[in-house]
Image (cartoon, rainbow, N blue to C red; front, side, top):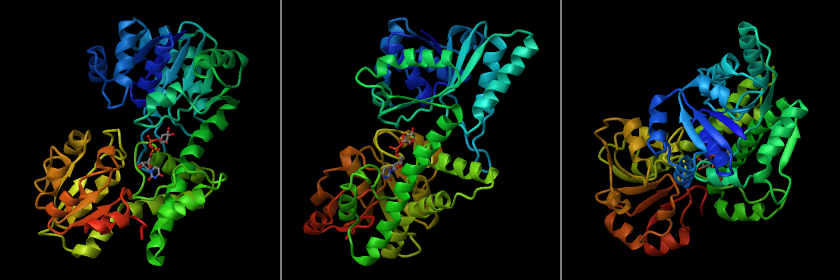
Length: 440
Ligand code: UDX
């Protein structure tokens, strides 16, 4: 099939590359010439395991192309994916200007039937905006090509995006007409060989499904964080509580890890956007309001512990930091707890040295020229001369460090662990003072 993907961010590039990998003829469009230059040069503009290989393989096979030419893109694919950003505007609602611009470009240049598939996370009702934009452009051209608008939200996780696309749990398709439904079935056939994974519904329900999924997961995390904070005051251990409730199949094991808060490009933005949608419709989403507030508070939880141990004024204190990315296997620091933690420690006068396997370039870009924040080449380097170690991201390489060496190198043998990576009993045995989140 001939497919166009508008937007070469995480969602667009992963979708385009994976769709090419099963034999489709895919053209990816981006308005950013720098991104297209990187892609044409055989690289990728993001860090995502496995993606570079798929992109290269399909470019070489002549199935995956990149362009900044909107006219060529609109004429290429019968299926036109829109996978552009929907950044929050000042009040937290999703800004649709890129989605609408993409739809307009399609309307301006399409020369036959098109299925316009929304993959960006967009507020309920955006399908109608896309339809209106295309109708307006076709009317201005005085032409009348048929088209369908489909909502097909993406559930991929950064760091596991290729696998999530290739082996999805479910494929949500919101569509109102048979022609589009048939094409979507054909398109996703290769990704559901063992069982039917497609859930067909109307466009609005599909749009809301995406927000509902992320909001539910964010709610689980904030709930566990709140209980973790309570557990500390009760002398209970949140890890044991997690195992105790996760074994109930109605609750399940996933997304019950307490920590220093959720971050990333989706949860914070989508929770805010859904709260806003509620306001627009006269509904105060009480639970989600609390989920968001609890997460903001949680991001400072580690700093609260540092302050309780070292005092309000941290000038003269020096800390080593492990992890900057909002989660492992990505260099993404959008809404990462590390941003709040670093800023607050600096504000209180501390000096810091940080290590992250891939996000340090991104951190340099974000924190700029900050004389009290340095970076280390190796994890153990951050310990030298540090009063304590602070762990913010649970990278695999931090799982089994040499605890004796940590103890010997740190000035105060104190570890603040925002991701509950270690067993308090093990830490006690080696003589490290250990502060987890909700641990006994
Ligand atoms: C998420 C959704 O999982 C994905 O389906 C959607 O398409 C986009 O948003 P992503 O943002 O890549 O994906 O990250 P995810 O792995 O879900 O983690 C989000 C945040 O929650 C991270 O900061 C992570 O550290 C935190 N988290 C996750 C917890 O604090 N506890 C948990 O139990 C799970």
